[in-house]
Each structure stands twice: as structure tokens, then as C-alpha cells.
Image (tube, rainbow, N blue to C red):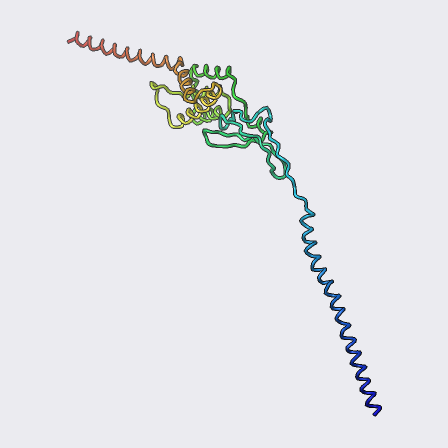
Length: 261
């Protein structure tokens, strides 16, 4: 009997010890749960803190440029390869990591906008409009005798084209003078007509802007000066005299024939 009692008491002791161990594990799990929760909460806080750390970049207002190299915005200029244009703006651009200042030039008649580096205006030959005195000199040039070299047309065409693209208003006037044909003169070839019209367009546009008139009025003034050319007037008179002489000669021949009969 004592042995049975001892066994039961041992079992009770063991059960008690198991029971005491089992509840002890619960607090450990309870302690672990808050740590996991705190970690889960900490992550969003850290993620939210990252955008706050990067300060937004404030762009500096761009400087409005109005003048460079002696040229101003809204000013009319002459670009040799295209003629008269107007500076719309002076802008700054970053190209290959370097800042570059550019003239924005509009050629209204050609419906074209050109950007020219401000540092290159001297190289490309961009200039201001001609003074009224120089315009007057160009108009006087139109009244002079045409100077046509006795060379191949291809060589003369190259010389005319070089004068047109030089940007020199007097040189352009020379091309207009040399290629002009009146109604009494032989018609121009297609290439001659093209060069003449290109030179006339460049000249009339600059005269129109300088004198504050329309291009049509400028063309009329140019043609009026061309009509005063002594060579053309003399040629027309010579042609009329020759016709009169031929008529007289024919009349004399008819009279002589009548006498012989």
C-alpha cells in the first residue's frame, strides 16, 4: 500500500510540474509578440521619413536677356545667308554640359526661325541694318552702267551668288543692276532670272525696313532707278535711230527704183 501512495504522489508531482511549465511558455510568446509588432510599426515610420529627408529643388528664375554683342531683342538685323530677320529673343541653352547663349532670329517671309550663338555673330557676318546714307548709295548704284564680264556664265553666276550672300547692300545692288532686263532687251535665262529675283528680294526687304515702307513700294523705287540707267536708255535710243535709218534707206531704194523705171 505505501508503494501505491508513493506512485500517486509522484504522478501528482509530475503533473503539477508539467502544469507549471506549460503556463510559463505563454508569457514568453506574449513578450515576443510586442517585439514583432514594434518592428512592423517601425518600418513604415522609416519609409515615411525618407521623402522628408530629400528637400525639394527650387529652380532659379531664368534671366531674361535683352542685349548681347550690340544687338537687342525686337531689332531687325541682316543675316547674309538669309537676308533681313528680327531678333525675337536671346535665350540660354545647356548643350553637352555647357551653357550657350543664342539669338533667336525670325525670318517672317521665309517662315523660318534661326538660332545663332551670340559669340558667332562676327563669324557669320550678321550686321545691323544699313544707314540711310548707305541705302542711298545702293540706289545710286542701280543707275550706273551694267558691268558684265565676258566670261563663262557658270563663273559669273558664282560671282553673283557670292555677292548676294555677302550681306553687302551695295554689292547686292550691283547684281540687280547687271542682271536687270528692260522690256526692249532680250529675255533672261532661267538661272539669270533666279539670281536677279534673289538679289531684288534681299535689296527690297532691307530698303523697306530702313525706309519704313512696304516691299512693293521698295521694288517700285528700285525699278525706277534701274530705268534711269544710261546704257539702257542709249541702247533703246540707238535701236530707234537704227529703225529710222533702215526706214529711210528703204525709202531711198524705192525712189531710185521708180526713177530707173
